[in-house]
Image (spheres, rainbow, N blue to C red):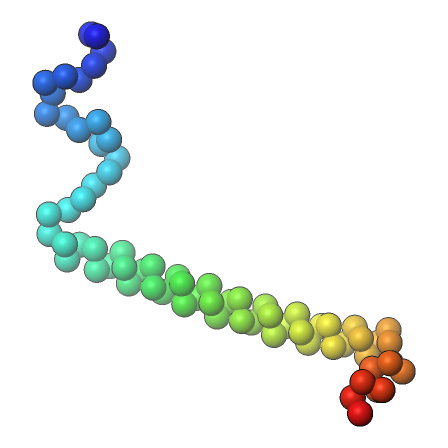
Length: 71
């Protein structure tokens, strides 16, 4: 076909870049680790806030049952 790139030195996927110098991966890996840690901290914070809200809701709407469960 005329539209094919046969015999061309241009790669088919120009948007992919794999550097020869592997030290260029270091900043990307550090950023990935940073974002994973930030996501984990955010998740823990949201879980703690959710548990606090659940306890507050139980105390507000079910005070008698809540006090019996504490014993």
